[in-house]
Image (cartoon, rainbow, N blue to C red; front, side, top):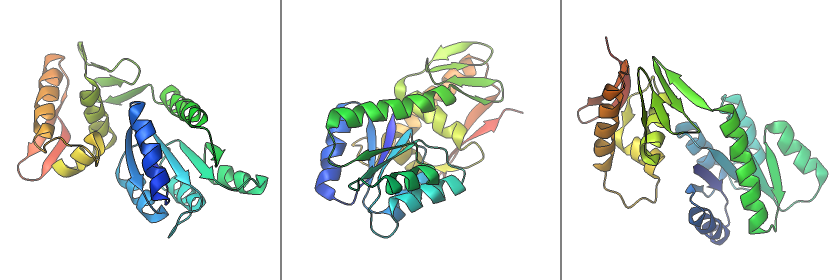
Length: 222
């Protein structure tokens, strides 16, 4: 699963990132609220963890603007404040949960599991054309069905979520593999090729079209 962590204390952000990645999460980090908002607008995440007290744009404002844009990503707020009014303010803005600092890592991980589980319960499948992408089983179904790898699933999910857009190779790389990935850029072409063949095999009425020098998009087969 892919998470956004927005925390301006860099040492703390790095420590949390290491713990999350050890627990098999992909993590992007933003160090201020404006950067967090831009990432939420441009990339699909399974959950976001936002510190309330951030420079440029505070966490509650990020939540409010995210919801105004119709982005339904589950959000948890981190706050050093214990006052109930601050917690209520964040929840009223559209946050799904909050955690007061300092916190125990085990509790943070439990809260993240609960947060992303609620998302999984809502988004069990994605549908486009005659294709169904199952969030629980990682199956892609059309006239037949086939199992996807984790990265193939994330790529297919990203393409479906952005089905009306031409996506650059770089943007796909950042969203699916993450900012900190050591993979070469041509890994996108390799996975697109594999996914396209699987779509053909199950009789999907959509394909992934490559626009040379630009990127990729899902297109209906006419």
